[in-house]
Length: 204
Image (cartoon, rainbow, N blue to C red; front, side, top):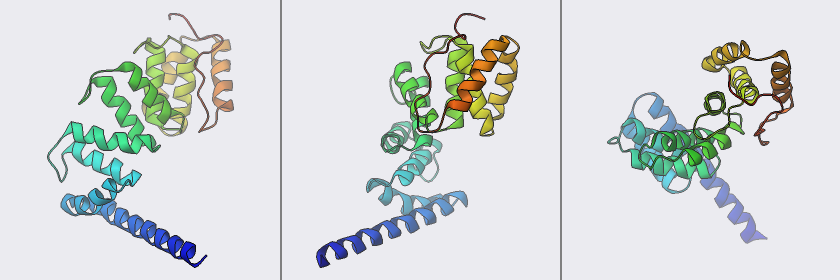
């Protein structure tokens, strides 16, 4: 029992220390003290800290505190994405979509965008909406799903989604808009997004 208690205390201490280190690193990054940020964040990222991995990935992507290196950016974002970090999942999806540091792979891009979107990530929802609207990356054209996704993204403050939703609404029937609104109301973050609608398929 005593050993278990000691282990729990040690584990909590490590977690608290990691949290403090990441906060310091993030604050340094926001203050543009990238050398300090790197010093705090890199060891945490190597130890498996999801937020630190994402931030280190951003530093490599932007060339802040380190030489710009898209392969390293992908490596660290992928680690964070696999742990469930929605922002990192979105970046991984975008890099696969554009073929940045990895072979272009739209199927893989869609899979990562969907993972992020299903967590409520507005930019990923907006991106998926574009693919449904324009029959891109092998996605079926579906105005209802595009509207639904833009509806969700707009609710999170994504201005581009608000504009796209208004534009597509002019090309939809009232039945299609009603279905999209119903799908939006029914969906909850952390649950699968629908992959087809009843009335939204087809060109237009």
